[in-house]
Image 1 (cartoon, rainbow, N blue to C red):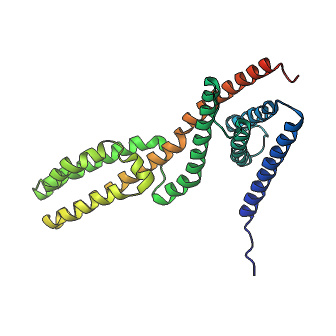
Image 2: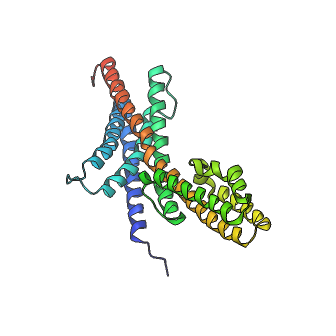
Image 3: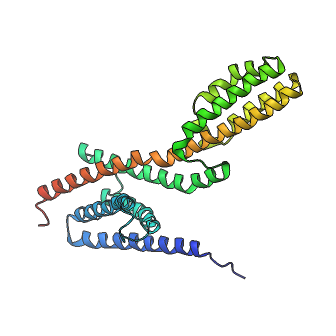
Length: 278
């Protein structure tokens, strides 16, 4: 029996099909115009500029959630597929070659950066939320610095307690030489996003080696210290993931605004020197 398609997969196929139809339609339309008109690039350029304007409206929609302008999820899907469509329009508009002029090269470079940052944002939105959810306790991004500071104070109190209770500086020396810098600030930002928990596993391996030279009371303290290390690792992971989801827009949005301004100016220049549509 043939496997049935899930509703979400059917929606993806439908959107991909509509995108393919749009791409094929524009391609056929452009080739048809090329027979009778000399300035078909003007029309593909206008289509590209209009698509980019539509993409920019997505950010405006997020800032106006009270207006009846379709659901945010619908706008998100529009943004994704219109983004892929804009890349096709750009390739069609440039004729699959890099522009020669200085201004045109600048415009093409900005569009490329916008497209790459958009694809990167799509990748983040599809991968990071699930990783953050399954990695550990979810925490509010703005609370992470305060939670990290409190955790460091708790660890330092635990280390001092180990000296008082065991009359030994073994754990205190290990904290000073190996762990203090780990708790002082966020660590391993890019490592957590690409390779998981390897930095934490390295430290835990060192703690297991240290246990060979400590007594039972120190073992209990090291167990508490291990829990604190795991909590710190989760805070760093949440900070890295949530921060990347928040702040990639500070690259994508300014680049998009620059693209719209440069694109509009480029269009005005083309119309002026081409004598409009004559």
